[in-house]
Length: 362
Image (cartoon, rainbow, N blue to C red; front, side, top):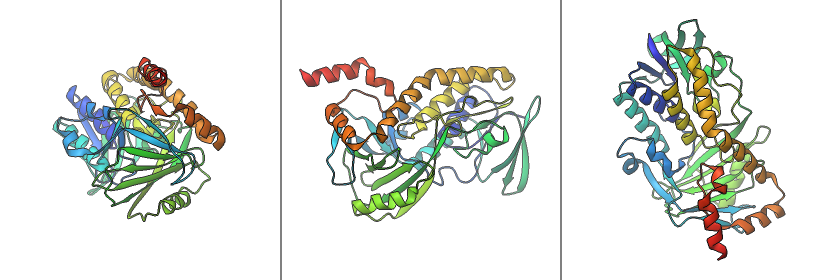
């Protein structure tokens, strides 16, 4: 009997597993394939990422440093509006390497991590939960006091526990070129319906191009048009869903969700690495595998920290659908040095940002 059977070894799953193991719990992690693959997520993250990684990770994973973003209401070659800081805003990292680094840290803490274990069924009982998986040795059932769904937007655990779906699932598309670009600005194009497209320089590792679009739109066609406008050929391509809007409940009787499975993502960018690992920490600090009643503490804790950021993120995203003339006027009025945090829309109202704006006008 394990204390926790964790499904998925992405950032949220590995972070929770490591913290739970360090707290003395017996943790089993089942990963569908090999950790880190297939890639379906951008490697552009805030510098806060290093608060969640083991010592030395930055030296191994960092690819580029970013100081700002150029916003365009049209495609490549259109006028841009620059938003920047004088210090590093964000980092571009080896995204596959991040997953593997976090998974190794979990194993170092005593976690039993098993790759190529694809979960097919989850059954809750009064005092335990059974998790059935297809493994290299055939079908096996693992028993735990609780199951933790960290298995992404199309979470099997979520379906098996009959938990509600996220509000929305966008189609995300990523592609990479080998051009060497150490630029310190990302490009954001408000050209995808209800979302945006992006170009992220990754130093010697090339350039990342991406786009997300709502259901009903052909994300791949939009992406092909976007990269053609840039005049590049994509050598490495991947796609995945981006969940937006957490459901009212991400806990069951003896199971709960973390990360993309719980739609703990930023509505205005789709990024979920930091929100997922923040929620993983709350889960590790509040959930007692012997007491299902503590799941309510987890629900309260992560929502208390992220609720306002997610709500403000929804409001920011609405600006992506404004008419282009209004977007242009708004971006022109606000461009320049900023004092915001890329993961926290609430920082738009911070003293630091206000001070920066006042400095611009003095």
